[in-house]
Every structure is written in structure tokens, then in C-alpha cells.
Image 1 (cartoon, rainbow, N blue to C red):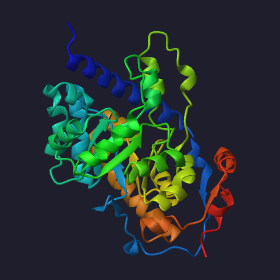
Image 2: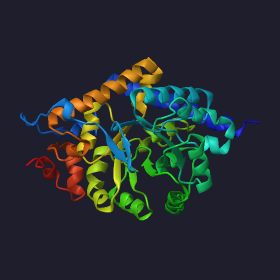
Image 3: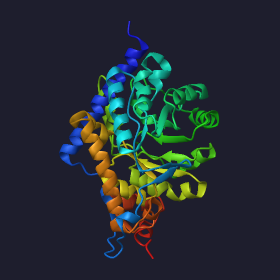
Image 4: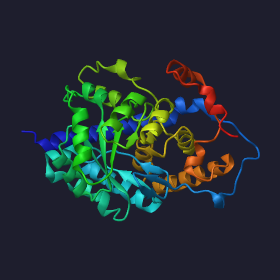
Length: 363
């Protein structure tokens, strides 16, 4: 008889294998995405001094030394526990925050606790984020936070993934009420994130009503969980959902004004391929930028040292791009001039947003 931990472990191993395959294909093909439709206006005399630039940011009232973080990935099996070990070591050595993958496997079977606890064991002083789904009870959320001595709790919402997942949920009507209970029921800051299909201004406003103050828009273009779950279906009959959702740039331009008005901090993830994409997201209103699949593919394909080197290089290059743009801080990037083109500009127009307003922000 198959145990609960074996069911969860098999699914988690499938997710890692399929995610790595996706990102290897993308890296080999240099796949474009909507970040390419965000271009900076080059002001030749805008540059500042690298010594004057800081990549630090603040999330939920807590200072982060870097605006880059390793976003939620995995846990729940022997293999994924080793992945988490590598990610935690890389986060510690590079000085970046890290989010756990969904901790549902631990909440169903405490025997897999070590595959998550390693995130804190290998990164005792870092900023570590626990992760539960919107069906978790406050008690379950507190258990997840306590297991890894988490500094924050991430609640992932993933209706498309659940619908395509053969064993997924089919009722999401209680999620808003559940999120509100979780915000009220834990003693750490709460971040609500999509898993790669994006957030709209309406979703951000609804989350603000529920007491959420930090939202990761997590747009289309990175790890595609509709495609991953479809590959686990016997007939792969949900292939038509492969391009569902909005990109991170589209989410940011859609939700930035609402977020500012409602006091919500936006994070961005989904389709981030290099430091320029990080800076683009920050210029569109993100406060920090998360990366999952790309970093996972480096860890799995090239090893821990390569991932640490990549993280350090990214932080350095983010700072150097800020130097060129004359932005001494992360908030200053949101005052730089950017040109929105192609499908992204069309998205703006259809949503009642003037793309031209982003091109004329420098006085």
C-alpha cells in the first residue's frame, strides 16, 4: 500500500524533474518573454557612483541586504531535501532570502520534516520563509513556521495548477476566508503569492481587504505548473492551458497603483532570466524579485558552487545597472524612464493604463 509520504514524495520529485527540464529547454533556446518588452530609456549623463548604490530593500518592515531572493521550490522527499540543502547553503553564502516550497507534505506526514528543516539548519541566520496553501488552518501554518523558525509565511494560491493536477482541489470558494484567518493566526508577516499565473489589481485589492500587506504577483513565463501537471495526466488533455495568465511585467503595471494606494508591497517573480529582468521588475514597482526554476536548473545542472557564483554575480550586476540608471536605491528605480512595447503595451491600453506615462518619469 502506498503511504501518504510516498505519494507526496513522488509528486515533489516529478515537479523538480519536470521544472528542470522546462528551464533547460528555455536556456538552450534563449526563449523570449514579456520582460523583453520593457526597455530603459538611456540617459547618457544619469550615471552615479557604485559606492553610492544600495541593493538593500525592506519587506514587511524587515531589512533585506539584497533585493533578490530564492523563491519557493520544493521539499517532501529525500531528493528534494538535498535540493533544499543546496539552496539553503547558496542563500547563506550569497546573503539572500529564501522561501520553502509547499510544506503540505510535512503537514500530512511529519516524517518528512528534515527535508524542510534543512533550510534553517544550513542557513541559521538568514531570512527564511515558510510556505503553505490556502487550505491550511492557522494551526498548520504555525507548525510550518515553527519547523523552520521562519521569518515570514508565504501562502501560495494556484487554482490553475490544482485544476490540471489529477489529484488537485476542485473547490476554491473558501480561500479568501482562509487567507484572512491565516493572516490573523500567525505571528510573522504573511506574503501571498501566485505560482506563475499572475495577479491583477482586483486580486491585490481583495487581498488588502483580507489584511495582506505583501503580494508576490508571480506571473507567467517561468516554471509552468499547468504544463507540469498536464505531463502527469494520462492523456495530457490540458495542453491548451500552457499559456494561461499574465506575465510579471503585466501584473506589475496592472496592480502598481492599487498596491500603492492600499499600502501593499509588491514582489515579482516568474520568467526572470538575468539581472536586467530583476531591474526591469523593480522599475515597474516591485520591491524585491524572486527566482525559482532558473536557479534550480543551475544547482541541478552545474552544482552548488555555480549557483553561489550566479547569485553573487547577479547582485553585483543589479548594482551596476542601477549605477548606469542613476538609481541609488531600489525605490529610485521606480522613477526611471521605461518604454513598454509590443503585447505589454497593448495589455496596458486594454486595461486602461497609459503606457506612455512610464516613458516620462525622469524630470
